[in-house]
Image (cartoon, rainbow, N blue to C red):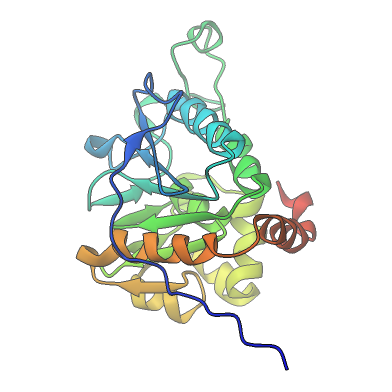
Length: 251
């Protein structure tokens, strides 16, 4: 008779994060690693961690770094501070056809929607990606947590889609994957009504995995990451790919 596998629940001690190799030059985000975990933080708290083209470029680079680091097994995506995970695109740099950066194309008025590329990248990163959510996860920021593999919310988290209020929408993961997560009727309510939902409402509809007090958010997220690190990286990679296969055409 085989013996049961002895497992430990993840240690809740917050690690001593250090800047990851290659992340020293980032301005809009921070990239830190410790204990087999990478933590990617949108670092624009003055605008509730809204993203601009430069933010997305740096996020994509950070996910590349985490993917290619053999010592990293799990990735955390979060926002700086307690007020917001991410509030979507920075409307102060919104152009007619996307968001304007500081590159030559942007100076000619050509906008970017490179957040769509980031969504695909998160889905196809061969390691679990955990959204650590405090405060607002709204609009494009809401879609960012939807495309993550797991979502852990603080009790002050707020969720919702605001696009239809300003003639905007997400015809990819933000709608199709949301419907797969919470059901067609609830997803349509979220988009058609543009309501906002608190953390407990999000938990009850299956939008997040768990809700914890704000002061325990990082410890709980790290604990989940450490528990996953006890499993086979190859198994996690293939399970993620299998679960995502049905939705690959949504991007």
